[in-house]
Picture 1 (cartoon, one colour):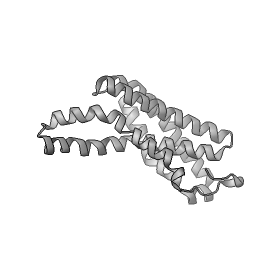
Picture 2 (picture 1 turned 60 degrees about the vertical axis):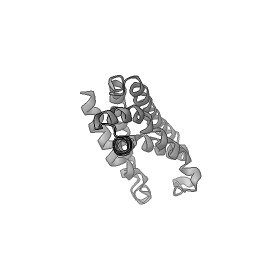
Picture 3 (picture 1 turned 60 degrees about the horizontal axis):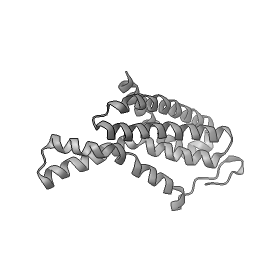
Length: 173
């Protein structure tokens, strides 16, 4: 049951998360932006909680439990911080927390990309059998799936990316 909830609601969060960054939607249809945000927040709450349940059963053993458990906890925490910030009308902080939540949501994609690189590289360059290559790679991805994403998210506003000015004259982060 936890796996189905994690995959289903995590998939919904993956699908809808990019919509929150559409400036035109945010500016012209703020009610839709808020509704999408609520659906994403609810999806992250369910998928992240299921992730916490699943982490101790990771194929990567203790490394997986730590990596995926920390990912789930941070995912839930960043989403909660985004909600808390917008409830306090701190739009700049809300946007920063949404970027972090987005980065953690896309850890699912990053994990698969790393596997697509690490497994064939071991097979081609070191002659490692495919199953062994997968097992070795899976010891790395519990952290590689999300740490680089979060590091990029932390640099995102600082890298010169400008968010459109928020309503009510709130300065951009």
